[in-house]
Length: 360
Image 1 (cartoon, rainbow, N blue to C red):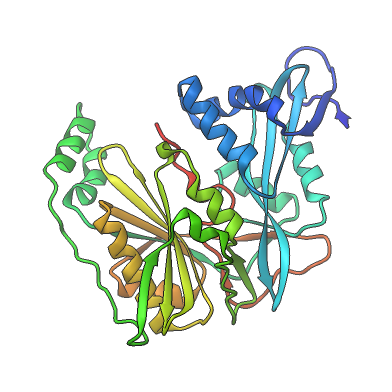
Image 2: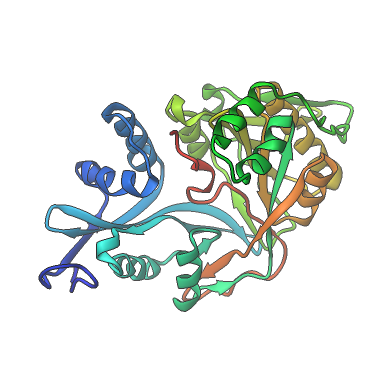
C-alpha cells in the first residue's frame, strides 16, 4: 500500500508500507536509536532489537519506507484480556514515531493498525500521542491509572531537589548523594491470608507449565501468559532482571507478580510491572505488594514504581508505604465494542511501558 508523502522534503514520491521483518531491523535501528537517544554498540543494538521486535510472541509493527529508508513505525503487541468475563485478544500500542522531517508519515500506519480486528488500549505516551489519539476517535475510559513510588534511600529522596538547583555540577552532587545514601524507609509487609502460604521466584523451566491465573471481578483485566513471561525472562542482561514471583496458599497457586530490576544511572531501580491474582482480595493484594517490594529491595532496589487502575491494589500500595505521584487516562479504540465501564486491572505490563528506560 502507498500514500503520498506528507510534510517531507523534496519530491512527492509516495511512501510504501510493510511489516517489520528481520531484514528490516538495520533500518529500524537507524530510525529508533535516534528516537530513543541511544548510542549503543552494534552488538548491544542487535541483541536488544532482535529480542524486542523479532523474538517476542504475537506482535505486529507497520513501517513506512521512503525508498530504502525507514521513516516511521507504529508498533503493537497482541495480548489476552478478560473483557466482561470473556477472554479477548486485544492490541497494545508501543512505539509510534516518525522522523521529524517526515511529519505525519506515521498517521497512515496508525489508521492501518486501527483497521485491525482487535480492540486497542492505550495509556501514557508522549504529549503529541495524547493529543492525537482523541482526534482519531480513541475514547477515554472511566478508570484512572495511578503511578506509585516507594523511595527507600536518601539518595533517591534528594535527587529531585538537587537536580532543580540552578548550579553548575548538580549531576556530580546527585552522584555523591547516591554514593553516601542511607535507608530512609522500611517496606510495610503484611501477613499472608493463610498460614500455609508460600512465595517462590520462578526459573526459566517453570514457564513451560501454564502459570496463568485468571482474575475475576473486573470489567477489563490484562492477562500475562507463559509465552510472554518466558520472553521477558530471556531479555538481554543489559535490560536488567525480569522476575516472576508465584504466590501459593495451601499448595495452590493464587497469584503472581512480574517485576523488573534495572540500573537507573547512580542506583538500582525497580518496577512492579504486574500483579495477577485469582481472587480480588485486599488482604491478598497487601501480602503480594509487600512481599514483591521486599524481594526487590533485597535485590538492591532503592526506588520501586508501580502502576495500576485497580482500587484494591492502589490501597495495598499505600499500605506498603508507596505514594501516588501521577495519574494517567487509559484510552480505548474499537469499531464494535464499547469501552468496559467497571473496574479495570491495567498495569505497566502494557506495550513497551515497562521496557523503558532502555540501557544508556
